[in-house]
Length: 252
Length: 360
Image 1 (cartoon, each protein chain N blue to C red):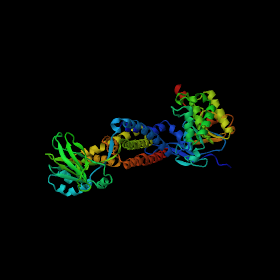
Image 2 (cartoon, rainbow over the protein chains, first blue to last red):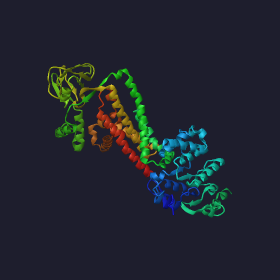
Image 3 (cartoon, chains in turn purple, orange):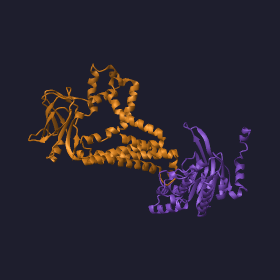
Image 4 (cartoon, each protein chain N blue to C red):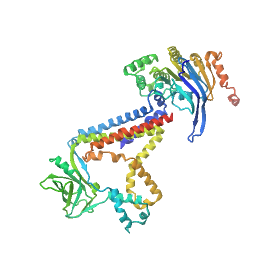
């Protein structure tokens, strides 16, 4: 059996205060595998540890215990990062660079030769439908346009694994559909995609397999088709329906 | 100094602001090492600072007032080191009934430091019709190698009398002779001409022919000037030194910004700059008798420790040498470049990379 692209073994993360006293255990003993060519969804309510898990996978946070490997290498390894594309939850772009300059900058960081970088930039700008505004500073872009630039910059190095943190956050329905179509197309071409989302319908549409996280632990994992008729119902059953939320009583 | 402050302010924000805006994450997930990120930030800022520095230098170069000037190598006399002199003075000083009892009770190292400062500031009095001589090793060889190049001598007289009094005298060095006739300045440069007389080897002598004694500190106030090259070359070497100082400040700012948030890094950077800049004058002006006070001694020890680690940028700046047409030596410029533009930033960038990795 082929080695998984992403592998987490008994990974835990405990955040500590200034005096090194543990404050919160964000992830606890998590095992996770993402296989080549699949679209994997990491689902969970706010504070369930999704972003922490992704940051540990990317080498941006060190786990307190456990082992993480990316393409069989530690997450900080250059060779592993060369095969990685990352779209963060918010598009942290340099506001004074144009869309083209942004892509060229990230192409440079991926060590692409100039000619290849220019070609890739043109292709990606075309793909995210930003060719017309390629010379405008991204600081003046709408949230949706900035998101598309960020997505293009995640794809500039032709990654084998694309990590999308809330990819449709802040996008209108049309852009959301476009992103979903794009993810499906990338998956069809063989790219492995790891995505987190609050929008269960989106995950249901694009993911092959999902893991539901709750309080830093895996509540369920499996193929979307195997989780029942509705992912939303399954999700609510696993993490709680919110019935215990006393707002109604409070208002009454 | 303004440029130093600006570079420090910009440097502290390079990584700190990117980390705070989370933009650094996007760079860190690319196949680049943490060292490359820190080194790249430093190199970019050092290049911008060096480019900004070109403008005032170019202005000086095209200015007719400076372009025709020549610079000189500056040599100081060979004297016993202040430390050695302090050790020799120690016993006599402690036995002296005029020495303050507080100083007598103080630790030997403190007393030696006081004496060392005195040795540095030691004044030599040259009475009327008296000759004072100082040795400049290698001067004879130099004059044999450059028979047609005429040196100068520079003195800074500290008269006990009015500054307006004249200083008269003669200066001799090897086969060169000059006349001191100074009216209102305490610092005087005496051009020397080749003559038939042959004086002692490697010795510069001053004979006071005025009607009053003159005083000077041999360690600081006697210099032999030997013509070097053009102002343009001196300016270039000064530029290298200034750009290197700015580079060091940039590397230090980037290092602070890696470990601390921007406002804290900025505060720490400015406090350290202030302490480094003001430290020597605090140490110099502090009265000896108060050194025995424990709190003051602790404060002074801290300032001295900082002073031992870093020299103030204003003392490193070659601007005063440039203005006085003193040659900024090539080996000094190269040494400063190697230490401040390459070695120290490399070490600081490595430390920044370690912190970046620890923070992830």
